[in-house]
Image (cartoon, rainbow, N blue to C red; front, side, top):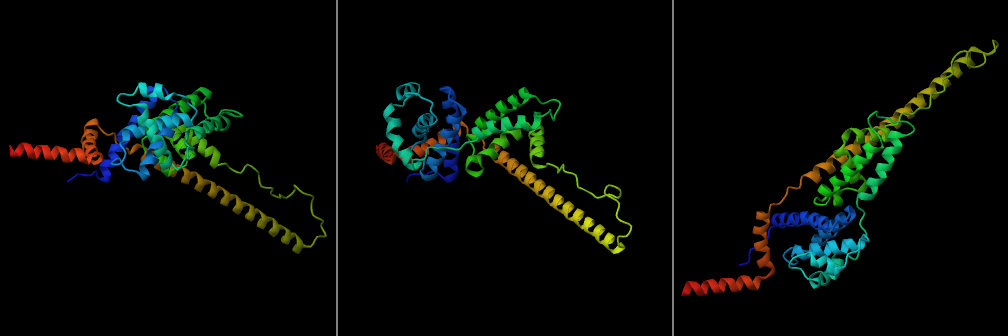
Length: 303
C-alpha cells in the first residue's frame, strides 16, 4: 500500500522548496519583488494542489519564471534552464498554463516592497522635517534602515504565510519595526499620537471689555456658566480624540508584533528531512514504480 504524505509532512516539504526560491532568485540576481511574487505564486498554487499531484521542483522553477515575466525582469527560457540541472524548457513551459489556471490568471501581487519605500520617504518627512526629531537620525540612517528592512522581507516574508494574513503596509512596518524598534516606534507615535496644539480660548477676567456696571448679576452668572460648559465640551472632545489616537497606535503595534512573531516561527527544513519526505512523494507520484519494486522483491524472495 502506498504511504501518502501527512499535512505536516507536506507543509515541511513546501517550506524546504520555499527556501529554494530565494536561492534560485539570488543565483539569477533577481530583485526582491520577483522573489516575493514567485513565493506568492508557489504558495497559492499549493493552496489548491498537492505535492502528490505536482512535484514542487518544476513548479518552483515555473513560478520563478512566471514571476520574472510578471515583474518585467526579462530572462529567456533557454538562459533560464541552462543553469538548472536536470530541467528542460518543456518541463517549465508545459506547466505554465497549469500554474496560471491555479492562480486563476491573476498575476498582480501586492507585496510589501512598494509600501516599504513609501514608509522610507514618510520617515524622512516625519522625523527630519522641518527639523530632526532624533539627534542621531539622518537620511543615511533611514537609508540603512530601509536596506535592512528589505533584507528582512527576503529572509522572513518569502518563506512565511504573513502575506496571506496581513496587508502589505503592515508587513512593511513589521520589517522596519523588527529592524529598528526605536526609530519606527518614534515614527508611529509622531503619526498617531499627535497632541492638539490649538489652545483653548478661555475668557479671562480683564481680557474682554469690562461688563457694564448696570448689567444684572443674573446675566453675568449665566454667561460664566456658558463659558464653563463650552470649555468642558471642548476638553471632552479633545480627550476622546486623544483616546482614539492611542487605540489606533496600540492596535497597530499589536498587529505588527503578531506579524513579526508569525514570520519568525517558520523553522528551517533540513535536507535530510526533505529527502525522507521526497521518497514518499516520489512513490505517491509514481505508484507503478512502487508496485514494480515490490513485485521484484517478492520474486527475489521466492528464489
